[in-house]
Length: 109
Image (cartoon, rainbow, N blue to C red; front, side, top):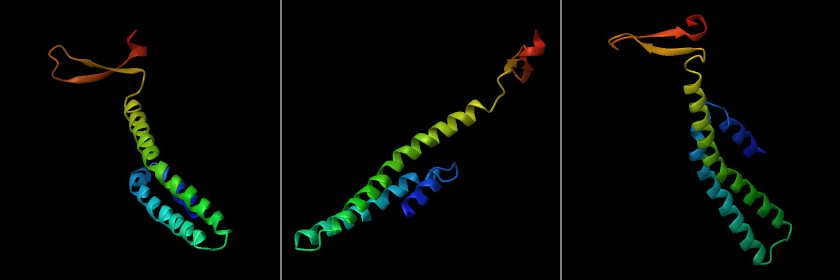
């Protein structure tokens, strides 16, 4: 399915920025579903119900990728900040606090 390929691309670290704009793709899917329901109600073939369900399902997938990509982006940024400094090092200030150096906690003991 093309939507699954798109969702896989959005879930990558480089693709997370496209999650919210991808929500706009839900509009055509729901529009297609509404048109197909109208065709069915006007006497069209009942097998179009399968296409209605498929278009609604794809529209819902596009809707939830926006908030999900924002959560994944926040988690990615938190992990980047957490890993910016090694765990066994701490920031120590000199006497006047003008400069700072990293000191290894294991060798300071």
